[in-house]
Amino acid sequence: MLRKHQWENILKDLCKMQYPLPIARLIESYMKLPGIGEKTATRLAFYTLDMPKEDVEDFSTSLRDVKVNLHTCSICGNITENDPCDICKDKSRDQTTIMVVEQPKDVMAFEEMGEYNGLYHVLHGVLSPMDGIGPEEVNIKSLITRLQKNDQVKEVILALNSTPEGESTAMYIGKLIKPAGIKVSRLAAGLAVGSDIEYANSITLKRAVQGRTTL
Amino acid sequence: MLRKHQWENILKDLCKMQYPLPIARLIESYMKLPGIGEKTATRLAFYTLDMPKEDVEDFSTSLRDVKVNLHTCSICGNITENDPCDICKDKSRDQTTIMVVEQPKDVMAFEEMGEYNGLYHVLHGVLSPMDGIGPEEVNIKSLITRLQKNDQVKEVILALNSTPEGESTAMYIGKLIKPAGIKVSRLAAGLAVGSDIEYANSITLKRAVQGRTTL
Image 1 (cartoon, rainbow over the protein chains, first blue to last red):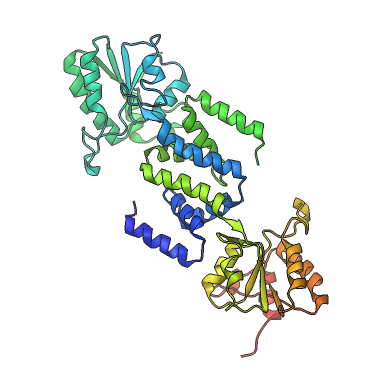
Image 2: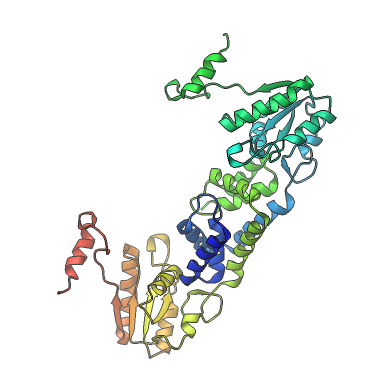
């Protein structure tokens, strides 16, 4: 992340290049997006200038809308227009299972799959002591409170990414929940469907062998 | 360019994927930018969700601003906040020379160079019969009117890109202006400073030899 004074220097440079101020500001905004540098931001800004007015209006409105109209659900932490979210409100869903995921996008991936009918809990991150992210920085506390308040829950599925941080977060949450007598499970690790054994890394292969199933 | 019903299908697909509507709309907006597909647009939309509120507000405002506050100068066609633009209004600039460029960005490149002190005329494109862009679609007519009204102009520099379209547009404008007795020049073609002869294409080399200067 660039610091404020660095942004100001870039903005000053852009002004030096005789860009009218509105363009310089738009370039600066585009540069705040990930993977977009000064050249691409300039190209996008000039492209925006030639876009139909209503498209730019829509873009501007939708940017504001995601900040104004989207909230995190007070129960599961997923992003939603209404609080509680549609999934938490839906009494037809299996109230005995909570799937713990890292990001709202993961909820959408499981919903797209369509096979899972339980509830979710979104952590908004994983434990990463190296980056100063401890249990307070992710949505773990509310999961524990939620389990304490609600004795319907029989199983917690830890659907965290298969990264070192994801694995250690799963271990941490598992240790917290198990004493309460709730079943804690995690997603199966193994070969991705359609993938080649020759390109799989050795840890994946090890997991695939350990978790082998009988035909 | 995608047609409207194709956009609607994409939007519908995104809604199917359980994205809340504000996110789906933002993804759709990002996808209208050049070189940004559905995956990148989704990544950017979720990144936007985590951006500081004031950054998103600034972004939203600057998008609207480029459409609301920027106009084309009624004299030269450059983009500007005030009409006429600062360059056209500046009486200390050389009023006898007009440099014809394709895009507002080109004006900024020459202004950054700092050696040129004349006026500009921005075409906003080049002739390209294959894409249906004829003399009416670019800002040529206003150049002719400008020259007819103003007999101070002694030279028109055609600073168009060295592409087939740029070259033929230069030829076209040259033919229109020359009968009026105005000097018409074009930028020197040759080796880019710092470039290697071995990597130069043969047309560039040919031009470099034709335009050789005595030491």
